[in-house]
Length: 314
Image 1: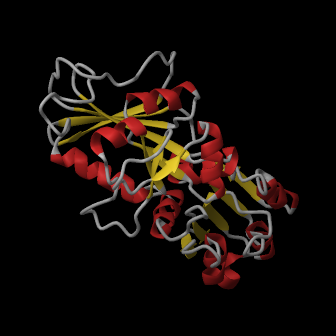
Image 2: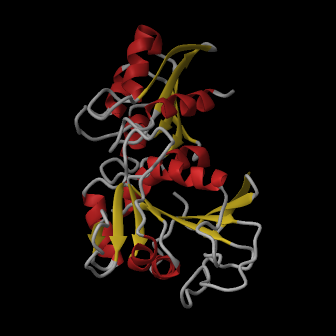
C-alpha cells in the first residue's frame, strides 16, 4: 500500500461526520517511517494535516506529507493548513487532488511552492471521487446528482402485476444509497402512483435524507415529502445553499429526462433486472439527446446487474 493509499483510507474514517466539509486524510513520512498521520474528524475540529503534524512533532521538519486534498489556504473555522505545513518545515507534499473551493483553488499549492516546498499533485481519480459530492457543491454551487433507474431487459421501469422491478439485494443497495445521500427526490408522477416514503430502512442509517417531490402541488394527503416547485437549476441552487451536497433521484421517466436535458445528472446507476415487461413506460419520457458517459463499471446484486457510469468528472 502506498502512503497516498493510506491517506485515502484514513480519510474514510471521517465519512458521515465532517459534513459540510470534505473527508481528508494525511500521512507524514520521514526516512521511510510514518511519523504522523490523521484525518479530519468533524467540522470545526482540526483538519487532517494539522492532526498529522501534531503527531509528528519535530520530526515533521524535512519530511514528506501525503494528503488526499490540497491544503486549504483560507481562514474558516480553522486557520489555513498550507501555512501550518510551511511552518512545520515539511519539505515535500504529495497531493491526491486539487481543491475546487474558490477560496483555495490552487492557492494552497501556490503557498507551498512560494515557500520552497516541493509539491506533486497526483490528480488521483480515487481522491476526486472520494469527495465527489462536496467537489460539485463547492465548484458548481449545486448538489452532486445521482440518477437511479431500475429497468427490465426491454427497458421498462415497471412490470405489469408486480410491485418491484428488481430483487431484494438491489433494493437494499438503494436504501444504502439513501442513507449516504443528503436528499432523495422523486417526481409528482411517482408520488401519485406509489406514495413513496423515501426513507433509508434496515441499513443502520445514521440519519435520514431530506425527502423531496419535484413538481407542481399540492401533494396528496398523507404524503410526507417536501414539495419543490421551481426550475431545476434554481431548485438545486437553493438546496446547495442549505448544505445539500448530494441528491439521489429515484423519480420516473419524466423527472429523469428533465434532469438529463438540463445536464444536471453527474452519475447514472442503472439496475437491470432479468425480466421482460413487454409493456409499460420506458426509462425516459421523450427525447433527451446524446449523453456521453465514461468510467463504466458493473456489479451483481442477486439476479440483477448494476451499471454505474459518470456523466461529469467530479
